[in-house]
Amino acid sequence: MIKTTVVIPNYNGISYLEDCLIFLKRSKGTTFDTIVVDNGSEDGSVQMIKERFPWVRLLCLSENTGF
Image (tube, rainbow, N blue to C red; front, side, top):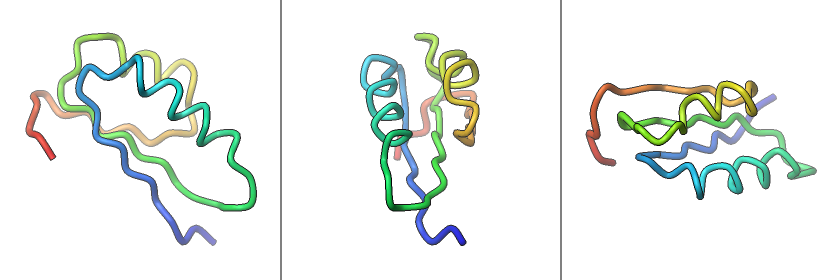
């Protein structure tokens, strides 16, 4: 049973996002869902998530709407 969801807002944050998702993947003892809300990134963030982190739910917005 999932009791926690990690939501990560992203806007051109590929350099931070990759390390964050690697850390979450290695986490033990807690079951959680991970959602990345992408605000129209143009730095390859979305493609990187699709290729390297298929377990992450990805919500893609067409523009930066902020938090």
